[in-house]
Length: 401
Ligand code: NAP
Image 1 (spheres, rainbow, N blue to C red):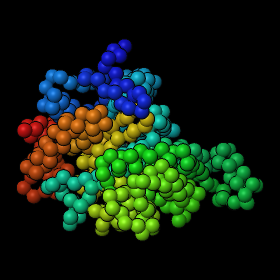
Image 2 (image 1 turned 90 degrees about the horizontal axis):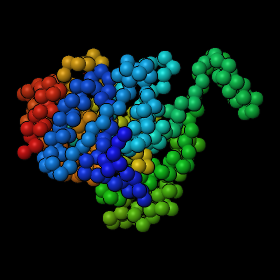
Image 3 (image 1 turned 90 degrees about the vertical axis):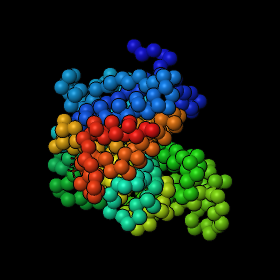
Image 4 (image 1 turned 180 degrees about the vertical axis):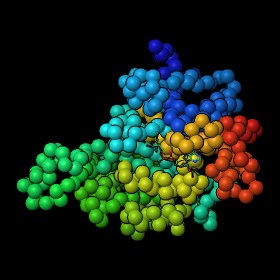
């Protein structure tokens, strides 16, 4: 169905991107369609600005979430998974996860099916954005969150089911650990394999982008054989595979131009990113910690409307907003599309179209500096002009210079 010459390929560990690549998009639920319209307008304008007609994205829609359910009767059709597997790169808006109806999160399923093992979330400040910090410009770090394991692996049993009872009996008989009668049980797997591949991706990123510090964030003081092992396997991997590039904090060696590798306990880290954000550049962390810390970090630099993200595996990538569907604002053309637009900027970096990414970032910077912003920022900025979602997209394009 798709011409071979438009497909992004992955050969010898390298992405090969044609001039007119197919890129899959899922517009998302709730505010997703509003955000997607504004974002696509910005992406197409930035590509045109960078390359005139020499390069152009061929957007291909894939269904997921409510739109898929209404049209096909399933939340995540097999065609969508097949399409992303075939075309490799996608960008998506937020999707609804019906709570407590036994339906697995579509986002989690996508990450696991495509083995998108790293969730990458850059956290940086745009001048003029309201922030609770005195010096928000000091915030500039990238979070590498493990994306396939931990309590998100979906190995859990509901209280008072035969399965939960069986697991509880097993723990008592085999290990003498008595659990309460009415108890839900979840398992937290953290493997050496997943820890090492995430570590490799993050350290390679730090080397390529000249980042000075890499910090493992874990709760190994309490969960020794999961979170503690994460830190130990990560350190071993760094030591065995990147020795020439790094120095550990406790080695007390001159750092020179090497990357300083250290670790912090997760709860303390929440304080650190508020009080001393400038000391952190790349954060590597298990799934649950990463989920919490990404949203907390986003709050320092303008909130969820400004927080982009990427889910990356070997040769597959889906870029997405950090926020959800914000259903109360659906179809009001109101919310901030920056999260998806900045995720798009990450996507163009990933494709090697750096010019497009720079054009987008500079234009967003200018638009925010001009105080022409959506409601979420306008309500916190003195003298700002509130724009609709679509108008904000248009202002970004006008500011492309
Ligand atoms: P949410 O949709 O992220 O919204 C929470 C609040 O964040 C909104 O009420 C709004 O704050 C602010 N916000 C979110 N997106 C914004 C944007 N683009 N611009 C400006 N402000 C924005 O969280 P939720 O209400 O907990 O979740 C709703 C649904 O989304 C659930 O079904 C959940 O499962 C799903 N979800 C999906 C994803 C995903 O697809 N990746 C991620 C998280 C949640 P104010 O009310 O203060 O204006």
